[in-house]
Length: 585
View (cartoon, rainbow, N blue to C red):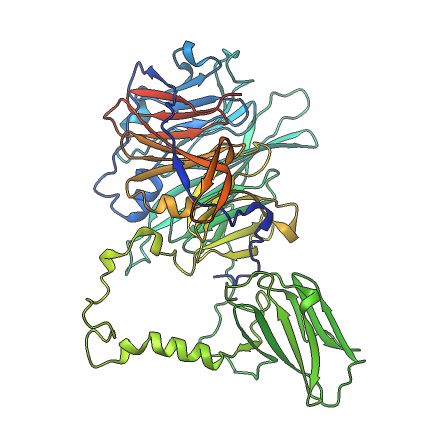
């Protein structure tokens, strides 16, 4: 696994330290119902698809697709293989979903068939998988309510295995139209003897038109790149111009094949390496960090080269390359930091943390040449916490009247993802990771399209909040931008044990969760109150209130699809499409 070399930069201006809680609102949510002519078939997993990865990839699939290019337009595939589109302009006059494309009957005869999957590639193109191993690239023309065009297949290909489409983009350069499609399938791995016996494969396909002068456009595969991993990615998307790929997963992915040729893997690091003396030592408290850097004996302060900004540090001696240089793990306050020469052979640096409380995992991102020194207080505290592990008594808790900790009593909000959970940016040419973020303490919540011209955003839990991150592949120094916060949503969603899907409005006005059956929860951003409210505990007037609403559907069928627009929430069951009017213009 590539070492972490980047950290997500939280925009403190988007956090609300004074947020109290959501207030339950009993305001009715107007709900409209469209009865479907044919059922949406939930494809059940077979006995051979028994692993957790099969369940994550196919058992929890969202059957409803939101068209980000056209407002309040959704699509889905029914049991007859029809791709149906519904665009809403007036809630009280909902029409029937309109057929735009139909899959062949033979796709439903495949024994290991998966659910059909759809990706809206651009305003006029789409990618469709029939679930039986066939990929369609379709010219849709302008979609939306006023369009009655049938989609035209411009490229089809049969794959060896059934797959689903994760993401697709379209771009034109020098008159050549190119589409990038990212596919996911789960394959048997004969080399996997200890685990489930399966591996997860991502195939990144580049399709271009190869029309010559006076010839009809013909689309052909230009490149095939295959990645392999051990877990289904929570997030995977191609850059808008196909120059790179981003993957968030609990286990690392690596490129294994390029156009059918195996990619040469770097030599694994030896198990034992020669241990060298650390260049620097560092320790920390909740408020500050102290760094001691070894310097040539007799060095003077005039010879010291020291540079510090909020996010970067550089320490060296005049005439030589820097001894320590790079991006700090978190931001510091340069004005409150200082350095001093000690004993003519070391430089002691005091750094003031900008955010008190969180402990740093490392000093400089990716730098392993230092050694972390724990303070006596920290060592004593850890020793006290671990005493029960060396006790002769089974329950070495000083509170002997209380039973030992029972793992079944832990709530979902107490758990963290694996340490290897990471967000990785891969370069499309070298096929190597360029930036890696360790997400070990940040639970993945959902993915949403905010701007169809940009990459999809991913929402992560940070402490109790849910933070929305917009990938910016053209900004290497700020590749993931914090663009919105949903207060306390990280904690709230952990209490929903029957939660199936989560999403938010593209304008961030609300976030929403739904359960497997019937219920949907809406969490609105704080808004000014019309009447005077007073907080008795804090003795102050409340100016804003965040509302929570609960919608209960008139259906006993499982929820198969769940999408949100700025005004509406769309919920799909096997026999109905419900439209909830959440906001008014």
